[in-house]
Length: 109
Image (cartoon, rainbow, N blue to C red; front, side, top):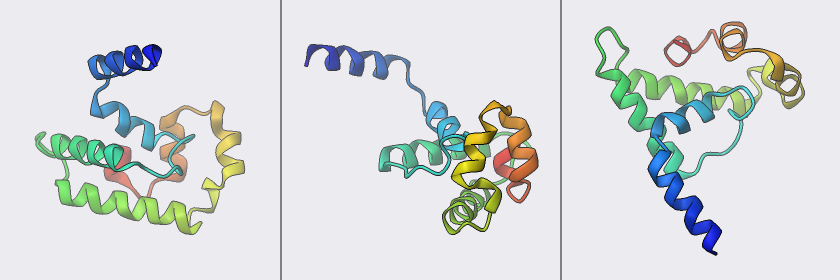
């Protein structure tokens, strides 16, 4: 129990919502179910990014993320099958997003 308390203290000190957003957009983890806390953090990051000059709106990013998750879940993006994702582990994230996620420009930029 003491180790868990130390972990949570460190987590609270060093974790930032951008880390959750990066996790759920990573090619190795994008198909996992999100906890409500992670979803909240991802949307918070989108809200922050939407305030930058020239950025898409929060609603546009959130809608595109919903399309992205739907495409992953319904196998519309057949290249994102588990086998292919495992095979792509060596690819950098930019190559993955450029090659397989061009339909989501707001998320991949």
